[in-house]
Length: 487
Image 1 (cartoon, rainbow, N blue to C red):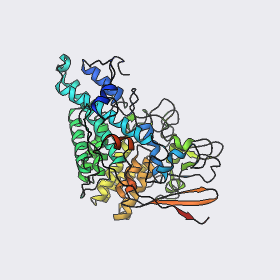
Image 2: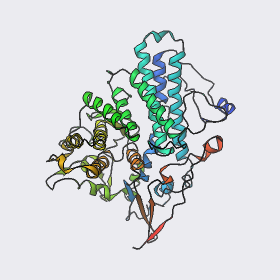
Image 3: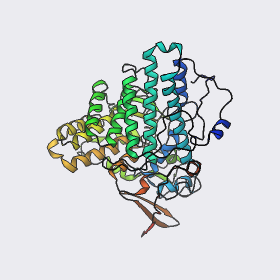
Image 4: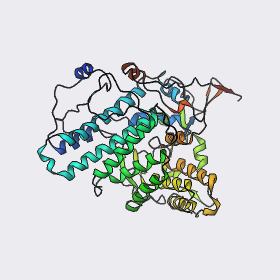
């Protein structure tokens, strides 16, 4: 817990006028006087699950509703997708032009809280560079704390870019990125968007700096970001940038020092959970338990796990093979049989998001597939399948090549990483997939479609921030036609 005498100096609004900032600053300001206090400040406000309440994780996890992982419940009864409980997410399910039409606080909360965490990281980074604190002769501890801050700042900027910046394209540097924030104070007059490539360059710079500073040996707990977690983040960012050689570089280093995968045959953990500290493949835990609350709305929720996901667990395997992930990742309601991804996301008091080795293996498999090293790609997939499928039979690399191998990798990513940390949304943006969402209302069946290169793949910056910061440009999301289907 953060020392109660330390006040987080960074308060909201983030890009407002200086006078407004000064009005909202606490009068009880205590400047940290040691590296330990800066570390406590980071724990309290810079992490994605800080005790100071700056976490946006619990909000953006429900945004899985924008993906093909979530569908409507045709037997939802009064809990249809458009009832009062679920109306908040109508705009997200339908990728509407006005994302704040039904709820003006969700996006605003994500934007403000994530940038608040960025600014706490900035305080730690910048002060540890310049403040004359006597205890700074402990250079290793100073570097370790600063390294955490660099990695966390990269993670927060990446999260914001995944939602509010246009998708990264290696050959196109679109101006519609996000503002890069590197200072702890408020910038008078506001900050403009940086280009997408500038944002990713800064993210990579921060990761490189963080990895160079953080103690490589420290891995006492998965509740703090560490060198291994930094490698996972580096692998994920390189994947989005289609820098296949870097994906391989970071992935091979990670799997050399942390090769473990959790075997699903047998109850290897307690509380019947998959994402938890005792899972051998987890290297960083954050966020709250059960973050996809939208899928637990009573016995007949309006939104449910799409049937296509469970169909996917039946593909790409022999009849004698049994994929154990549906059993380990999902729980069925005892009354209705509706499945929820509760086992992935913990129980009360647990943290439900993780960086883990399975993602790195899948990133490696994709990178090797893209570099036409299919034997290595299939070998990695076989290692994962051995720990996920009962009676697993090794795939022969000669049978998987080109687009068939890439489709196998894509399917495996969905099966393995569903409902984790916006990874599916990230993948849909990378691959520019076509996604369809359907629902029923008053006996009529409707559908909307998200198409490749669609502006709906980028969320709008909250109106309150656009009004406050005149330098921000707005992305024009399309008015999406609603198709009426024959029942």
